[in-house]
Image 1 (cartoon, one colour):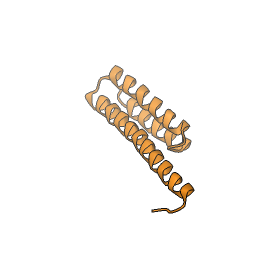
Image 2 (tube, rainbow, N blue to C red):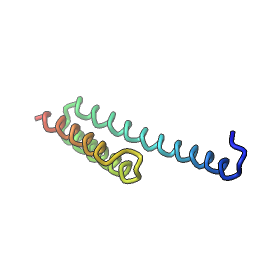
Image 3 (cartoon, rainbow, N blue to C red):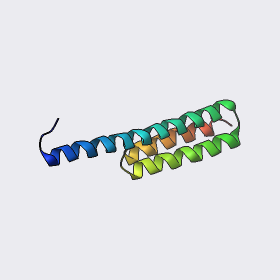
Image 4 (cartoon, rainbow, N blue to C red):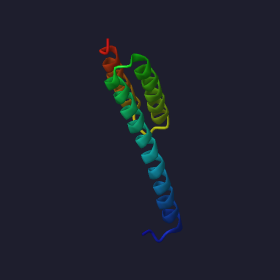
Length: 87
């Protein structure tokens, strides 16, 4: 553990930031899971709603810098392709 006061503070801040980032990434995965489940069910309307939630979550996460912008765009594109293939 750090001895210097500023280093102790940075360690605390890093831990808070880590937990916040982890929660945001977890919400992205949950939204993805819901979107995939909607696609598997075959309900186009439900899939479109779940996709909307997923893209929103990705955009928020990318805006905060937790994931890269291109990473979010790639994931949105791949999910859109899956929904388009539904028919």
